[in-house]
Amino acid sequence: MTRLRSPPVLILESDAAWDINIRLIMSRLNSHFISFLNQINSTAVHDPSFGSSNNHKTHGPPPAYSPDKPIVANPDDPWLSEHWDLFSIGQCFEYHQDHDIKLVYDDESVPEGQDYWGQKMGKERVIRKSGGITCTTAYAISHTGAAKLLLRSALDLDNPVDLLMRRLVMSRDLVSYSLFPPVVAQWEYIGGIGMAERGAQSDINGGKHMDTPENAHMPGWEDVKDTGSIWTTKGHHRDVAFDKMALKEAWTEIIGEEPKKFEASLFNPETQN
Image (tube, rainbow, N blue to C red; front, side):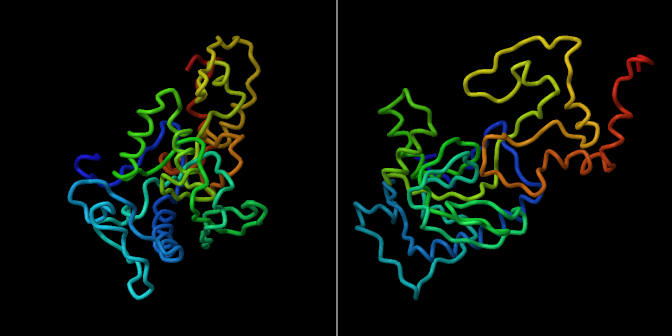
């Protein structure tokens, strides 16, 4: 990626979840992200690649931002990756630093009532200069960001990658932007269906497997019969705000019927069918 100066790569963890209207959400975000870059007078980040026009050591600092030459959409690079190293769209926590460098825009897919550092939000989303993220559920990395992470991680092999990212962002060595609320979040199984007991939840500390007793009380299955979903977002990730979580809508979208018919396809112990 760094040698070929490849386009940005979007990295998703296996427990990533999103709203069913993700295409519309990302399209709306894109236009406002360009406005945000103009608002903060963004210039291209240093690209150490040989022959790069953005190599500041070879060609000097980039020209200062000019309103007469605003940043515009680029079909060949729709997310304008020369302006950033990392773009997080799915962190589980964000630090306070630089929270005031932001652009707030209307987004009907965001439920009202989110709290952005003491400010109650309507149906709105925030693009911000990252203050340092925790969790790497979903992020885009540019070739300049990949080079910085490769170098930094080689000097500190014992640290998780999200903590290295956070430290590079907080030291402002990594040019990074993020969203509030995030577009992508982590899913987990709902309670009361035996998955936590089996150690099946996503857990960086490693879930401990336990056989579920045959007579175990599992009230969660009653909810499954009504909703057709065994998934929810992780409860302790307080910034998550989906209008329609795609996994929860999957039954109706794929089967095409209301989830209440789910029970008809369950095993019946009385008939053994």
